[in-house]
Image (cartoon, rainbow, N blue to C red; front, side):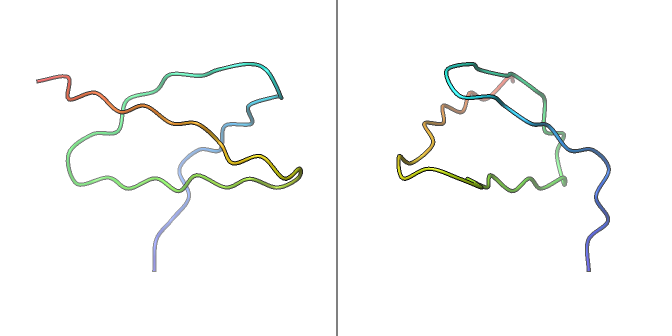
Length: 45
């Protein structure tokens, strides 16, 4: 079972950037609306 270390809320029409360290996981949830969330991932290495 995982422990939640932080939670980020992204309002409609806005964006956020964050770092996911090696070994960490994240989950992207859409809590309302019908449009799927757009996501872009970059390898910082």
